[in-house]
Image (cartoon, rainbow, N blue to C red; front, top):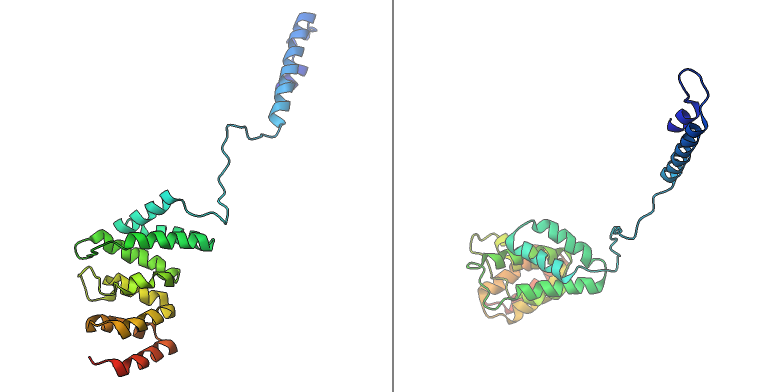
Length: 219
């Protein structure tokens, strides 16, 4: 519109435009044309703009973010969100899976563990256990099976026994370790928990494990 005005505008009385006025309007026309050319050019990213970060499939969660997720488990603050994040990372590579599981187990394996007095440990085991179950983390079974009896003391429901709940969640892969527990554990209450886990897992492997343990069971 501005360019059109430059071409069509003149004195209202129809007199021709003088040379000085014509020169002034020609300069304005050149400026307007340059502006139109610049506006029509595609916009390119400048060196000061940061590109959107695209995480490659081979990358893993950072140590800082992993620590933050474990804190979320311990506090019960949006644990499902962090479980989904860590689960997604763990499925990217065996190395990333091992990093996440190893770090989680190191945090769970606290000396003198007492979930009745330490609520944060209970939450870490509960929500961390959900992740281990989802990943079918059989490498966690030694720690889990050795803590079957640990509970927050709030209920006899197995959701208050996070190690027991996780062992069941891992599934059939837990049965060999549970069978070993039945053979070598001296405390009958712990053997009872192992039987409970095997029964809940079910299947032919569970049936065979219980059948083999029965002849040696005196309680």
